[in-house]
Image 1 (cartoon, helix red, strand yellow):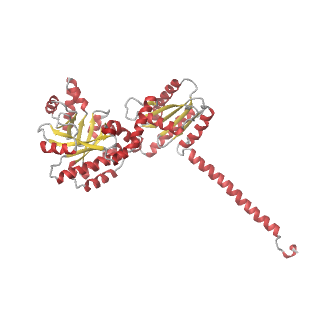
Image 2 (cartoon, rainbow, N blue to C red; image 1 turned 90 degrees about the vertical axis):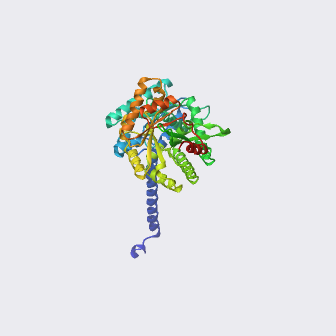
Image 3 (cartoon, one colour; image 1 turned 45 degrees about the vertical axis):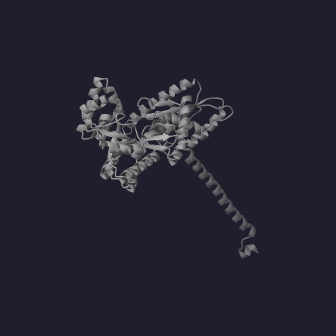
Length: 471
């Protein structure tokens, strides 16, 4: 008998096992649901600001687009100009505080509005998508005004100077096709980026003319790497001349793209595209390789070398590894560092950019020279002239063009040349095209000149002969 023997009935044991299994299953299901919910939150919500992530924004927008399929939406992307520099200047903790302040204002402004969603995307990109209830032009004006107020408010709260850049696009269905969210985000980003280097424009709208330009630039993005492999990108050389002796002292390496039907695509068409999408580093490496290879050839042919300047893109400003990579490539072709000069553009240099200063000091310590291109084209030139440790200052050609006809402009140019010289830097003026220009610059004490008066950009073989004729 079970009661007397103390044995457990089989049915009771089975119930215990089943109960235990049930508990395990229930726990697993609950835990899976919890983990799923947690994972979903991680994907759809930004952990720093508590706003929707870009993925979360897409989910919410698809719902709104479906419910209001015959109506228009305004999608706006906000971005802090040079946020990487802000992080370096104030520190990443302060950078996070700025991002959270931006999120707080966006949340306060739009969270209570019907058919409106706010999100943070990658890094310092923020998004607002709202249903256009009235006039589209009015909605755009209001968004531009809000952006200005947002910039001012966050700057005051955080006690920092920031510049917000924004791009907007009106989204609506194209016939029966649904709104393509990712495409709209891309277009808003393109509009925003079009203002990136502008001093006065901080807000742009993606319209038909911008769409045509966008499509042309996408073609460039899709073909540039193939063009590099096919060596369609030509490196040409424009001599730099000593104004007093008339002899060559160096040259600038310039890039031209020989496209379909041998049509030359100017650099101001394709280089900004590469700067925007991060591919400009590939172009830099291609140019360095071609220049060093050419200089090696000149050495083997016993042609005297002169200093060649090459562009150092903004992308390389952010990595100290650039110096090591450049040195490895230079050593491969056995070129002495004294013949290598790196150019930075004034628009990409800030007087308070300590990271760039450190990079220049490291280039100096390694044995390279550094020049500042287009000096005078930006806003903070005098400050940068005193703080940025460059060796050569290339004065923007517009000053020379104006000095030819204006006494006031001649005075300004003369003082610029004098300041550069007294600071112990080499002065070079670009855009020299006439004998009048040459005489004017000689009288001012400018040391070097570059321009069509001496030579247009020329091929390797033409430059080799130019060296032999002007050394």
